Every structure is written in C-alpha cells, then in structure tokens.
Amino acid sequence: MSGTGVTLEQARRLRGALRRYQIMAVVVGTMLLLLCVVAIPLQYAAGHPGMAEIVAPLHGACYIVYLVTVAELALRARFRIPELLAMIGAGFLPGLAFVIERRVSAKFAVPRA
Amino acid sequence: MGAAQGGPVAWGTVRGNWWSRRAVALHVLLAVVVPGCLAAGWWMYSRATHGDNIAWVYTVEWPFFACYAVYMWWKLLHDDPAARRAAMQPPSGATVRGITTRPGGAVPEGFDPYDESDPELAAYNRYLASLHERDRRHA
Image (cartoon, rainbow over all chains, first blue to last red; front, side, top):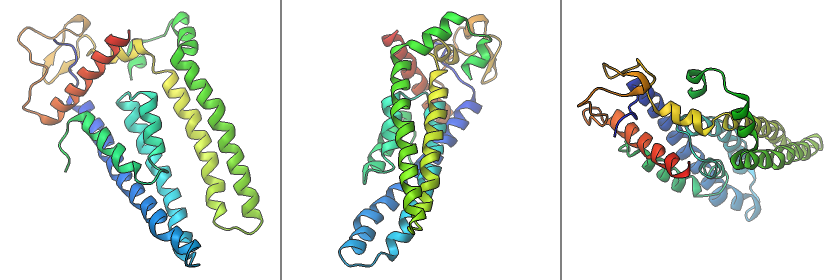
C-alpha cells in the first residue's frame, strides 16, 4: 500500500494542533470539575458565591480558547461530525473532557508526554 | 488544503456537497444551534442589564458560539469526500521525505511510506491510512 505519505511539515502541524488541544482539554476539564465540585456547592449550600464568580467566567474564557484548538485539530485531522460534537460537548459536561481527550489522543497513536 | 490543490470545483460537485446527507445534517445543526445561541445571548444580555455583572461574560460568549457554528458549518461543508481523498495522495512531483513522487502521487518501487525512523511521521501516516480506509468503506 502506498500513496498515503505526507510531509514532515504536515505531521508537525498536526502534532502541534493535537498538543494545543490536549493542554486546553485538561485546563477546561479541570476548571469545570472545580466549578461543579467545589465552587457551585459553596455558592448554593454554603452561601459563598465568591469562588464561582471567579471560576465561572474563567471557564467561559478558557472554553473559547478550547473551541479554537478543537476547530484546528478537527479540521486538520478531518474528524467526523459526531467526533467534533463530542469534543465540543466535553467542554461543558463535567468529567467528559478527560475521557474524550484520551480517545482523541489514542487515534493518533502518539505517546503522551 | 485539498480544494486548493484540486483547482476549480465543478458545479455538480458543489450541488452534491450542499445536499448530501452529511451537508443536510450540517444545515440542520446550524439551524438549531445559531438561533439557540443568539437566544441564550439575548437572555444573558437582559440579565446583565438587570444587574448581574457575570452575565456580561456570557453576553459576549453566546454570540461567539453562534459565529463558531457558522464558521465550522462553512468549513465542514467544503471538506468534500473527493477533496479529502485527493488530499491523502501526495500531489504529483511532491517531495515526500526527499523522494519525488510520480504522476498520480505514486512513489518509486521499494519506498516504504511507513518508515518508523520518524515516530511523528509514522504516527500521522498510520492515522491517515486509517482515514483513507474509512473513506473507501463509506464510498
């Protein structure tokens, strides 16, 4: 089988896109867990909204950056629409970001640093 | 990437791209997501103007999501299967790791596209090969 070769430059760009996505997936996933497990219970159960008022907008801002990395990776690697939707959803469903990130990374069979 | 290499696209291809099952799914998604995002943005704006300062963040965020949906819709719509397959073949005369391909993207005899000496390239090649296989099964 031949004809599927690509240049090293393309491989590097894809690798860069994957790395940026991996970093943002962990950042957004961590913030969302922090928000749902600590900040929101503090706000509604303990009446201390201070942490949620900081973490919620921060998560919102990071999610935008996350979406940009998702767009770059999904378009470059030609993901299917359901795969793309799973990556988008992973940013606002608690815990899902880590699961989806592992699955996406596994597609490339590149060892994780 | 693929379309730029392939040159002008025939009208039949364009029409096919706009009304294929995949394209219709994209249109439906867009029709649901964009009004939804704009409605949510409007709701957040009304909360923000009634004194909820954090809602200003979401007043900006929801319209961004709507723009994102339009951008992805447009990009995915133009990522047609033919261009996708073409992109997987190195163009004629392209240099792949120092080897110039023949017309049609064929590589000389004895050339191993899965040279494991560069793990980055090998991993990407494996991934591309799996995409290629997937496209063939769905074609």
